Length: 291
Ligand SMILES: [Zn+2]
Image (tube, rainbow, N blue to C red; front, side, top):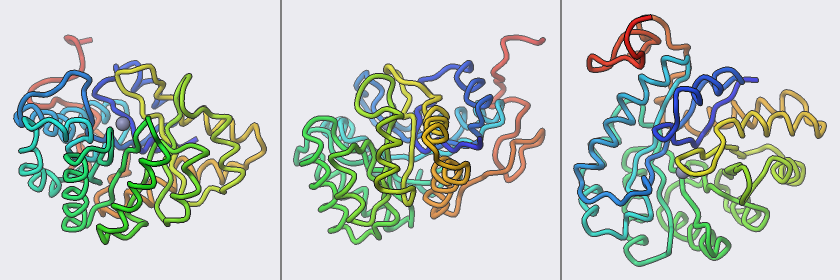
């Protein structure tokens, strides 16, 4: 199985995770910028985080043969904190960089006026930079949040095929399909959406414009959920081409709209200007001493 995880927060994961992801076939991924659990108190905190997503984490993934890309944004939750407002001023500089294949995660957390403003401004940035957008939908009041999300996307003038609306479920998939946006599903260990429900949704809606991700982060989550969904699809009678479409070709088509995907294997020297599978990053390797 060849897998592209279109939404996973590797900064929060260990080298064991990278190893087991590579073992089941994860060859590429997108890490969206998000909330770290601990509130950030200044724009400098974001600058260092963005730098690590385009630098160190990309290098770290390459050590396991995985191509790392990222989506950058001020996340919905911290859009409510005035100390983080300046992030929107530094963002344009970052959206021009290699390895940045989308704006995200943007969208709503509690649907406040501050979130409205940050969401709309970042959709404008996506239009200006010709990038796709990863939109997070709120975990509470999901139907209303998704409806409002689609209204804001429509008003932005961004073509719907450049937008993935994520964390969908049985209640919200229909309206996103009708809007022409891509449909994102986060498969979690014991809440929200699981492999079996995902297979049922694929049966009903087909595989077109569907992205399946693990959304693994610092919370209870599992970076192998993409692979497990592929296995559940096969067990339910889907063919290998369907699995390949959902787990590889769809994310490649969606993020490929950025023109910045790097999908060759990380070699010794680092082809395509992206990090190679050996060497150091700013003098550091992931090894603890020599072997
Ligand atoms: Zn996320």
